Amino acid sequence: MMRKIRCKWCNLKNEVYVKYHDEEWCRPNFSDAYLFEMLILESFQAGLSWECVLNKREYFRRAFDNFDIEKIIKYDNAKIEMLLSDEKIIRNKLKINATISNAKIFKSIVLEFSSFYEYLKQFAKDEIIYEIGKATNEVSDAISNDLKKRGMKFVGSTIIYSFLQAVGIIYSHENDCFLYKGEYL
Image 1 (tube, rainbow, N blue to C red):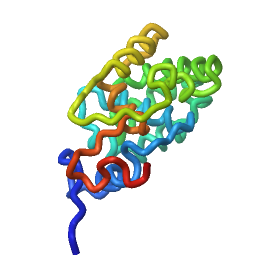
Image 2 (tube, rainbow, N blue to C red; image 1 turned 135 degrees about the horizontal axis):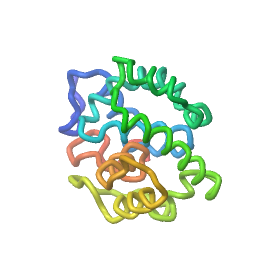
Image 3 (cartoon, one colour; image 1 turned 90 degrees about the vertical axis):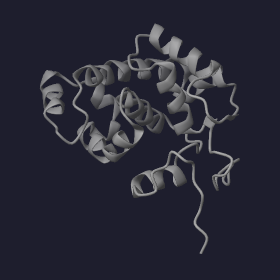
């Protein structure tokens, strides 16, 4: 049986990573709940590897009330302290506080545009961007700058670029990957 060739970055020894690569990364998923989860997870990636965050994803889901934005908006100091003591997640106070404030801004964007995807479309023009080997582009720069103006933290252009790949706005499977040019697009 022939083994599937995957993007070089995918650690084939990590089943969670392989499953993410094969079934989720670069696949269009524009529900607000998914976009919020991925934006939060990507913000925790800052300074770390995506594999590290992905390995803790289920713990993040439990710790952050399954990324329920209404609950996260209401987190108080007691909840923040509980998160800071949770050894199964990334315990960075700045990132935890940013998650709460970013949730409020995310919600305000949803109220303004009717969905977060509608907000993203003003930058991405409702088209899938095909590119490989980049860490930022004009779209990620523009979204990052706008989110920062709105007060979001941990949303630099590289983080936003990774986010756009994760949710399927940027399609970056490598030329020799079995998913190149989208088996599912």
